[in-house]
Image 1 (tube, rainbow, N blue to C red):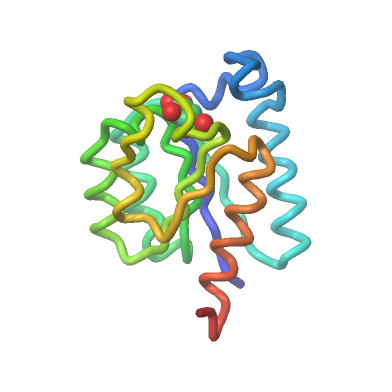
Image 2: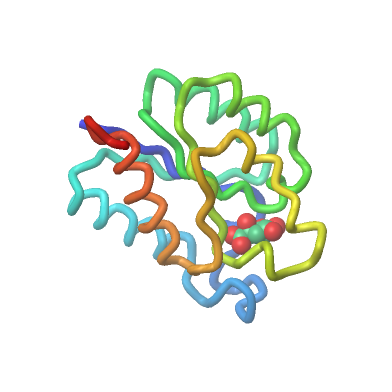
Length: 148
Ligand code: DQA
């Protein structure tokens, strides 16, 4: 069965109470359960993780190779700063869908730059928690036999 890792970066553990005017009131636990329900519906295996630490996210990307078939990555603020995450993705042979709850392109200029985008299969942003399900579908589509 296709296996997907959804990996969340710094401060996403605070979802629900963090800047609700930007990120809404849905918690990460609620997002995880929506993702688990969707994984069951589309027949994929799902791992879901969060870390506030850049090195732990690098480790998770390395460890995903051989365990999972692709990654949905919301790298949070590391999106805009982390050459290490970009290199980690470039170093493993796994498709990555970059994800953000907010539309990073409609926010501050420093959020317009993504170190993930050049090594990602694509980017989904601006759709709030629903973006997680959209990203799962995008990744599952890429991984489906005969996908184009
Ligand atoms: C975010 C956008 C980032 O700019 C921000 O640093 C986050 C969350 C999003 O999901 O909208 O932590 O990745």
